Each structure stands twice: as structure tokens, then as C-alpha cells.
Length: 81
Image (tube, rainbow, N blue to C red; front, side, top):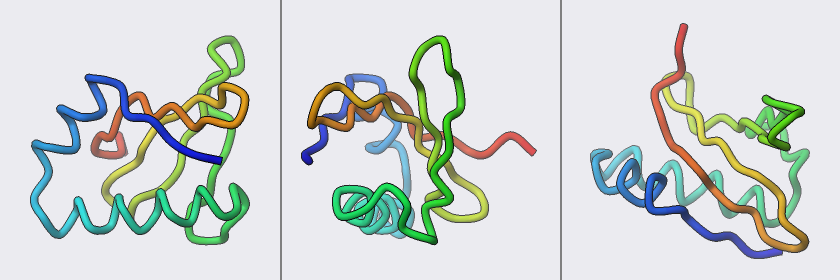
């Protein structure tokens, strides 16, 4: 598997501080190895759009779609509590 950032996700990533960017990098590397990696808590978020959610940390989530062998990361945002 490989991944791709949409323009929105790239913009979201660039706006994060370096500490959170490193966490995103780490979590995406886990996603590439195993979507069921425990710290990701990956789950289907929107069935109609085939959108998934995974955890960066307690505060941030990233949203992605699966297109063949590519994880398309569409957004990285604060988790709405």
C-alpha cells in the first residue's frame, strides 16, 4: 500500500505544528503496515463516501479513502468532541 495527500490534507498538514506532523507521519506509517494497528483505532466514518477515520492522538484525526492500493488522505483535523 501507499498513500497520497489531497490538496486539503496537505494544507491541513502544513498548518500543524512540527510535533503533530511527526505524529501524523508515524500513524500513517502504521496505516501502511496494517489498517488494524491498535493505536490507529481506524474505523469506517462515512459509508456513502467510503471514508475512514484514524487517530493521530487524542486531539487529532485523519480521514482517508481507500482507492485500490492507495490510501487517499483527505483531511487532518482536530477531533470534534
